[in-house]
Length: 273
Image 1 (cartoon, rainbow, N blue to C red):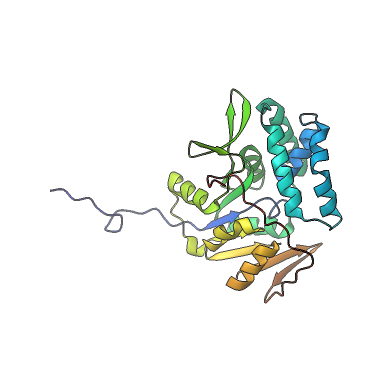
Image 2: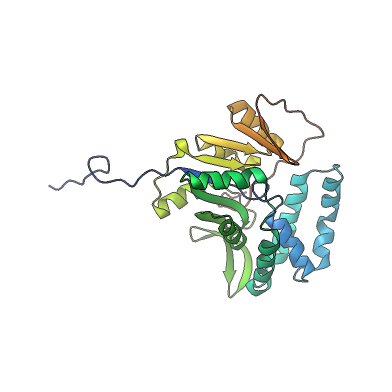
């Protein structure tokens, strides 16, 4: 009878890797890559002017603090992907390149400097974002990330179909995102032996809560109300950058300043609605 040798009984294991996992939109980038792409596609005439008019009410309400950012963002997400369906990659890619070229330095100081610090300490830098993969890859490359994962959009014969691809399967564009499942799949596929207890994750919204909960050093950066409440309850670090000052907040008192907003629906991965 033959016996297999277990990994713990003498087989050489790969060294454990400390990860530094970052969300991008609102965490590194001081806007949303998708918002900037939407505006650029309208400017170039790839999307009609009507697309802007469809989100204008939500945008103005948020700008005047009479509405909420999440409501504006989720409206734009729906409108963007409705108009992008049927567009060609040749129409969209030049707009993506332009957005990255013009906006690559529009980042928060805190996370920009943290990325440099963690890279110098030997952390494996990984970005996981809801924005589409082509943008995420380019943006992360500029910042020196080791790897990045964005929304993989299905393309058939050079045309966007309006579906998301994950592990070779097709899902509706509005399918829910599970960043922990995406991380687990990435680590397994690439053979990364992660030391999650000594890893860091940084995010800004309630969609990042499961990912932050998966590491030993979570940072809620400029958090949404939902994320701030969870971070406060679980003793996570809360960091806020305002103007030219970075605040590390302890024992925060969370005050509701307006009526509750719709919680942002995490979008882009295989959990069906």
